[in-house]
Every structure is written in C-alpha cells, then in structure tokens.
Image 1: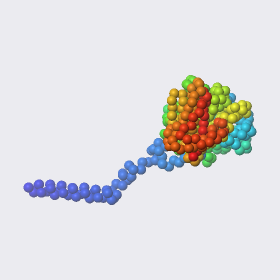
Image 2: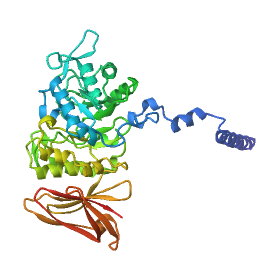
Image 3: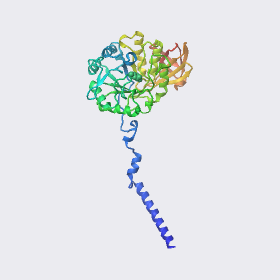
Image 4: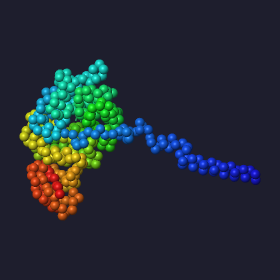
Length: 421
Ligand code: GLA
C-alpha cells in the first residue's frame, strides 16, 4: 500500500518535471542551439546555388550581344582576325546596334608559365592578349575570352581546373569583360560546384566579367545557375543547318525546340543560351537565317554573331542589323517568349514586352508557303480589341487590326510583328 502511494507520488513528480521542462523549452531556455541548427543550416554545407549569401553579379540585364570566333574560324583564330573583326563591327554599324562583346573562343592558349599563369599562343597572338584587349577597348567594344572547367579545353589547350583564381586574376589584368567557360575533360566534376568556383574567382578578381556557362544543358543549369553565371548553354553545339542531329551538333530548328520550354527560367541577368548565331555562314538560306534570328530574338537569347563580319553580304547585314528585331531581343522586361500555337509546320510564338505590347512570330517550318493566323485568343486578348501592328522585317506599320492577324509566310521563313494598344 505504502509502496503504491510512493509510486503514485514519484509518477506525479515525473509529470511535474516533464511539464516544467516543456515550459522551459517553449521559453527557449533549454537547448536553443539544437533548434537553431535545424532551422538555419550551415551555408557552407549547402549547394552553391542554395547559399543565401550568393548574389547575382548584376551584369547582362539584357541578353549579351557581340561576336565570337568559333562558328566561323574554329581553331584558326589569331590576333589579325580579332582586330579585323573589331574594326568591321564598328564600320558595319554593328557596334551602334548593340553588338559589344568581341570574344575569342578556343585555341588562343599557350602553355602555363613557371608560376602556373596561363599564356597566349605566341605564334597566333604575338602581341599578347593585353594588347589585343586594349585594341578592342579603344574601339569602344568589350573583350571576351574562353576557358574550360576541366583539365583541357575542347580543343586540347590547358583548362582552368585547379587554376581558377589564378586564371581569373590574369583575365582581370588583361582587361577581360566576358568569359565563356566550357565543359570538356571534366571527368567526374560536379557542374554546379565547378562553375561556382570560377564564378567566385571572377568576383574575387575585382573586375566585372560576364560569365557564360557552356555545359550544354547536361546538368540542367537553368535550375541552379541564375546567381552563378549570366547565361548558360541549354543544348549541344549548333551547326549551320536548318534541322536535325549532325554528329554531336544540332540544326537550328532542333535547338529552338529544345530551348523553347525553358522560357520560365530566363530573366534579366540570367539567360538561356541556345548557342551562337550561324547567320551568314552559308549553310542556310536567307529565309532560314531570318527564322534563326527572329527565333533567337523572340526567345531573348544572347545575340552572338558567328560569321566573318569583315566580308559579310548585304543580305547578312540586313538580318544582323534589323533594329526592330534586336529591340524585341533586348526588351527590358527580359521575358523569354515561347510557342503559343502549332499545327503541323505552322507555328505562332509570342513574347510580352515591357510596355505591355507583344512581339508575335508566325513561323512556317514547311517546304511550301503557308497561311498562318494569330488569333487574339492565343495571346489572351479579347477578340474585340484592336491593336496597332508593325511588320518587323518589312519595317512597316500595318495600321490597327482587330481579332486576328493573318499572313502568307514563305517556306522556312517568318513574319514577325509587334502588337501595341
Ligand atoms: C565546345 C563548345 C563550342 C566551342 C568549342 C571549342 O564544343 O560547345 O561552343 O566553344 O567547344 O572547342
């Protein structure tokens, strides 16, 4: 009996203690550290893109525009090509139209010096990279260069793996404004970590440098790169063909299809990159190049010309210098447009613009001319609304239109308009 009373007393005492402990816990008097650790994990343990301390570098608020040596010159690049191109970008009016970055792609590199600093190929760039950057800057342009997150670039030159901070410092000393960073010879490296290391190295260099990730979309950089870089390749390499897979490379329309669904991930400072332009390289017709340029602008893609600017034809110039279309690409809202209607080879794409208007693309992928209409319903407009239309390839205002706009579109060509209230 006494035992039972004793047991009851000790049970009540334990209950009292438990209640007291509960009250103390609620007041935060006991073990706050444990609760805190669960709520605020150590940022050093997070993936780079999840680190709350990471901020975007603030560059490339509109899609970068410029020129890159790869699509035309591949490894046959040298300082004369770069200088001639910089001169031609100015004299052709491309600079005034917004093409500012002159980027040397692969194959500029020499060996690393005794201290591990990267040097230039002495035969191709005898005056040195600093002198070349100065030449480009003297023309009011910006200067870009290429490296790789692995041990070797895709062209077999020294990569930046293990030399990231040293390379970023060297680029800053040379006056580099833009780095394209490739993904060859990376073995089992994790892409997010590898690109974050170079991103941090560029920040530490003290020079504002646009960071272009060239990882071909393999590890879905649109999910993690928006505060690591400014643009990321979304697909394999482009080739100067209308459609299809050609070895490791992809035709223009095939790339457009792969890049299109990624539209929600693009925005000011961080862009999907469906690769550089092939306009003027000779593998497609002028109509196909018009499609290429219009689609890239509609998708707010970087407009990096890839042809020989010094010798381009008037037809190529008319495409690359179409200011109406460039204006769609460079719109300050930075929304990537996308497909809103498809029927076989006939498609309608739309891009909302900062002033409330729309860019609309009627694209005929077929081998004969086709009639294509954009119904206001495809754009979310009431049918009764009348809009002022402008044809961006004819450079012509079309007056006010209500309910629907219809055009005959030649084979493999586009009609591109803006609609304003
Ligand atoms: C990769 C890239 C290309 C180009 C080459 C250079 O294929 O995707 O854009 O930079 O390497 O070797």
